[in-house]
Length: 86
Image (cartoon, rainbow, N blue to C red; front, side):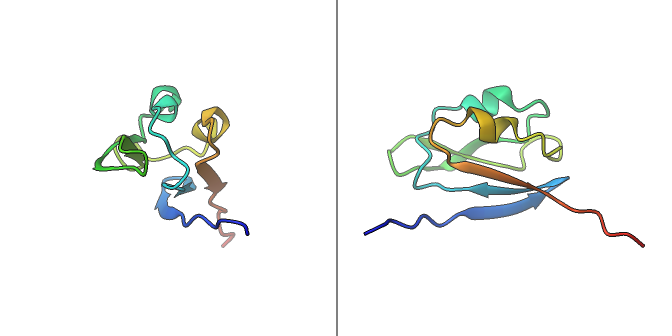
């Protein structure tokens, strides 16, 4: 039976940030590599008893997907926000 993980979703800047806390082990690679310091440590502990991460700490997300690429646990998904044509 497959396990389904629920994401914490936050729209921030140019991206929609999906964090799957059930997959995050709190290694901090995403915080280290974010070029605009959007991601920071949460006050909540993750499922492994380590600090979890969360978006919304620095400048707005630029949707570069660097955090998604460096996450060893695939706990982050970034969707680019599409601009509406007027």
